[in-house]
Image (tube, rainbow, N blue to C red; front, side, top):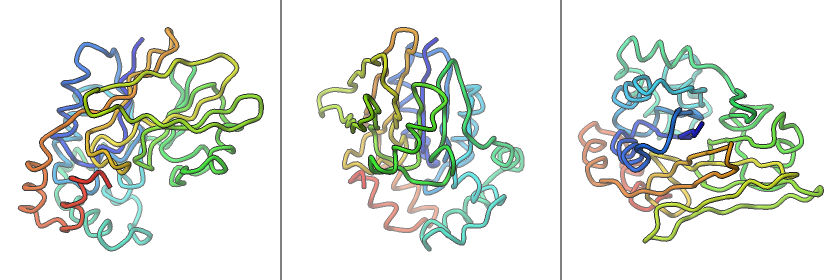
Length: 247
């Protein structure tokens, strides 16, 4: 079984479509680590696509705020404004779908899925010290997490935490990690719709656990088209501009 692992799509259907086109024929099941909506101009279109794919999805903090099951008081003003805008845009059936997304962690074929961290779905895991708790708590050798919008991850082997960076060169679309026995992995596929690691291309991963490989992908998409829709929708200009820089 090969899994297409998506995270932090953030209502960017153009980026999602580019990811799905690049991954065509390479996966059997879609998994989504949360933040389907927020920031971007296409909340209904992205939800429609994820539902049509039959994805196994868990919720993210923007899914909670965008559906209204959580307030956005702890968001910065820009993110809070978009969360409220998202609530107004959602069709009732899509809002209900967001409301019913399960909280992580989830377990699939011997690996785990979380949005932020095991003990707190809203926790950001940026550094090895933050990753250690999750690596020690992990019920399976491999955990996929999102939330940070940074493609890469962490390993635990012989009581030492390692850092993984996956950023395929401009001329390459993917790089492959070989899963090693005796190692625990905390892996982030990156953000489909709003990368923040300096690479503006859409990020995702394809996991072939049976063959001990995880491919980390980056694919270009029409950023200007998304920016135009954001501007037309009246979304905040800082969010519009940052897409081009991957920040």
